Amino acid sequence: MEHSAASSPLLSIVIPTRNRVPYAISAIQSVLEIPHPRLELVVQDNSDNRELDAWICANVSDPRLRYRYTATPLSFIHNFDAAARLTTGEYVCFIGDDDGVNPEIMDAACWSKSEDLDALVVRQPATYVWPGAGIPSTIFVKITDGVMRIRTFNGSLIHADMEMEMCVFVRNGGLNYLSRNLAKLYHGLVNRRCLHSVYDKSGSYFGGLSPDIYASLALSCVAARVVVTDYPLTICGMCKVSGSVVEGAIKRHSKRLEEAPHLRYRGEYHWCELLPRIYSAETIWADSAVAALRAMGREDLVRQLNLPKLAAHCIAANQGVVRPVLRGLFMGMRIMRRNPAIVALQFVWNLLLLITGSGVKFARRICKRFLITIRMKDVRGIDGLSNMVEASHALSRHLKENGFSFSDCVRNQNRQITR
Image (tube, rainbow, N blue to C red; front, side, top):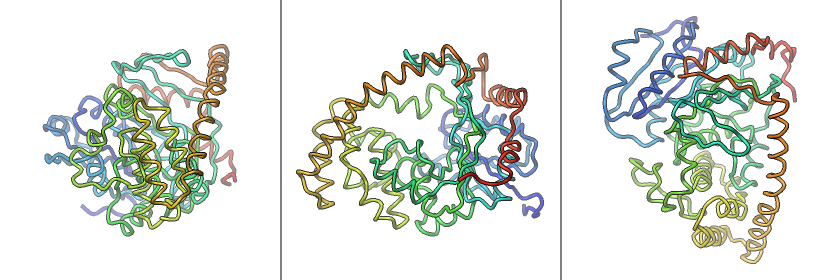
């Protein structure tokens, strides 16, 4: 059905899902409770059965939902790519099937359109721990099931320089991309024209092995007007099968690259020749980042990738990988025609910084946790939440009761983006 200009979707919220029906149902319900007529919810289902399909047929009649079931097993990348092809909104936002959104995300989409933004990055989403997640507490953070945490925010709207952010990212070894103000399709809003630019350049919306980091780097190559906010427009869910939880268990699993779940159903895949052939969060992210940069013709940035720093972090974070990481490091630097002696010194220096810096960071984390415990100002916890519908309601209620809104963030900025 063709949409009129007035009723065509402004924002497509996209949920790729596979075999996580209870979480997906709650995510669907929470999004469709947003009454805005120009919202579109896209669900791309690649489950082993049609349980979610049956539930939707029996319980959902909202025309704003675009649902498709694909029986043929797909890789992470192919499921995300199939989901992107279903969207029709002017802006697109991907979330996980255990995640949620703040209903004000439609206000953010309207403002993004009025400012002609290429992307609006959500720097600090709220977090929600699903019941039964099984995430262990630490001496720094007590993890309680059914709790949503909202960090203190100031509602800033800050312009980000994509070229500078990408340079810093690669010079930092492709580590901790979430700490950089890169364009983000996952828990962020991206203008469809940028998605089309990526597709026209590379032939697909996603590539590599990790869809979120691939999209982030690819989109950062084409996005010009990008604004970052710390206002909680999305909710990052953590359940027992969340990627963030499962990836935390990589340290206890085989480091054989061939056993990485990212390669399942991926078909023939060419791993980056510059990187160690091991399965770790650091190498998976770096490989996907390089794949994106190469697809977008940015070999100049690939050549700046700090492999010694990546190797040092990889060894510090994973057990039993010293030999393959060092072998991969020197092979990669040989391809890049770097002096082996200088590479060795850079690696040792980064490892020493990591070791000595860990003690300082440890002390800072203890002090910070102590202050949070005493003052309880940095993080607000809302407990007793059994699903994402309740979490979304609780976030909205908390913001309203405390006089916060995205519209106020815009007004407080006098419609000027802070630089």
